[in-house]
Amino acid sequence: MKIGIDDIGLYVPEHFFPLHELAVRHDIDPNKYLVGIGQEFMAVPAPDEDIVSMAANATQPLLTDELRASISTVILATESGIDQSKSAGLFVHRMLGLKADCRVIEFKQACYGATAGLQMACALVRQRPNEKILLIASDIARYKQDSEGECTQGAGAIAMIIAKDPRILEIHPHQGKYSLDVMDFWRPNFASTAFVDGKLSIDIYMESLKHSWQNYRNDGGLALTDLSYLCFHQPFTKMAKKAFSVFETLEPVAAAALGESSYADSQIYGKAIGNCYTASLYIALLSLLENNAQDLSGKNIGLFSYGSGSVGEFFSGTVVKGYAKHSRKRFHANMLERRTQLEHAQYADWFYGDKHSDAETYQTPRISSASYRFAGTEGYRRLYEENTQQALRVA
Ligand code: HMG
Image (cartoon, rainbow, N blue to C red; front, side):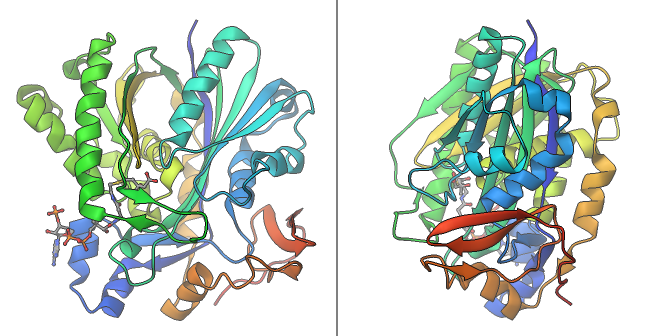
C-alpha cells in the first residue's frame, strides 16, 4: 500500500521584519545575516495570533466536507505549547468542525515532533487504510532579544493530510533514527524564549545527520545516487549548505553529482520566513515542490529532520505523478508577497512584549485578517474566533 502526504498547506503571519534592519540594530554587516546565516526576513505573529490560530489557518484551505468525515486523528506538533495539559489541536478540531469520532494529540520533541507525527500517521493509515490523518506543525521560534539566535527567529504552520494513495509524496518505509541526550537547545517551563548553545547545536545537528543517514542505509534506504533532491531541517537556510557538507565528506562522488541544486529550491520559503521549528523541514519540502521548475514526478527526495535535545531522522519519499495539479503555489506566493513590513519597535513589542501571558482575562487587539484569530482569555481560558470583522492593518 502506498502511504504519504496527500495534501499540504502553509500559513505564514501577515507581518515580517527584515534582517538587514536587525543588522543595523546590532551594528553589524547585514551580510552576516543575509549571506552568513542565509536569512532575509523573519515572519512575526501579531498579538492575536498563536500556534493554534496559525494551525487552523494552515488547515482551513485543505478541508472539504468529505475530508472532514474521514479525519480520524489530529496530531499537532509544536514546541511553542500554550498549555501543559490540554493539546492545542483540540481548539483546532473544534474551530474547523472536525467530527467527534476522532483522537487529538500533541507531539513534542523540539523541531523533530512533526516527523514523529508523520511516522505515527503513516502507521495509523497502514492499520486503517480508509482513515486520514491531519498532521499539523505550528511554531514560533523565539530567542532572547539581541542574542545571537534572534536572527533565526520566525513563525508559521504547515498542515498535511496523510493518507493511502497520496497525491503529493509517497513516504518510503526506511527510517534512520538517532537519539542523543544533549543540552544544545532547550526551553525550561518558566521561560518564553529558548536557551541555546549555538555552536554545539550545529555540531550535534551534523553528527545526528551522519548517524541518521547511516542508520537509514542500514535499514535498506536508498543510496545517495538514487536521491534527486534533499530537504533538511532549516533553522536558517545556511544550515542546508552545512548539512550537505556531511554528504560531501561521507560520499564525495555522489554528493558532487547532486550538487547545490539538490537543495537550493528548498531554501526559498525558509529565507523569507525564518525558523518555524517543527514546520521548518516541511516548509523546505513545500518550497522545493512549489519552486522547482522541473516536473518532479517520480523523483526521490531525501529528508532530514532534526530536533535539538536531540532526535534526528533521515527518511525518503517519491513525488507522485500529477502532484503539481494539487499545488497551492500561487496562494502561498501571494501570502508571502502581501505581508507588511514592521518597524523595529513594533516587531520587538509583538515578539517580546508578551505582557498578558498570565492575565486572567484580556482581549487581544484585532490585527490579524486571517480566517481564525486568538481573541484573548477569559478566566484563564483561551478564546479563538472566526475572523468575521475587518481587521486593522499595521501601516
Ligand atoms: P553567531 O555566532 O552570531 O554567528 O551565531 P557566526 O559568527 O558563527 O557567523 C555565522 C556565519 O556568518 C558564519 O558562516 C560566518 O562566517 C558568517 P559559517 O562559518 O557558519 O559558514 N559571516 C558572514 N558572512 C558574510 N558576510 C559577513 C559575515 N560575518 C559573519 N560580514 C548561530 C550563529 C547559528 C550559532 C546563532 O544564530 C544561533 O545560536 N542560532 C540558534 C541555534 C540554531 O539555529 N542552531 C542550528 C542547529 S540546531 C537546530 O537546528 C534545532 C533548532 O531548530 C531548535 C529545535 O530543534 O527545536 C534550533
